[in-house]
Length: 73
Image (cartoon, rainbow, N blue to C red):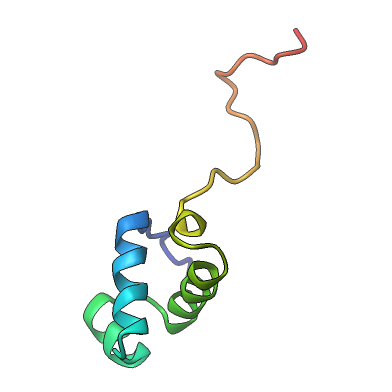
């Protein structure tokens, strides 16, 4: 069964990381939010390494949309 991708905003990630850093357990945060423990740990590592900017959602490379123009053309 395929999992559905869930989008988490930068603000949501920051709030969860700050709760975690203030002493809230991963288990409690998972119960409250449904976000996996591994994601919370990953966000914490990124936050501690580079601050809030590291939690920005980045566009992932992939197949180009057929409606976009190729710059070489």
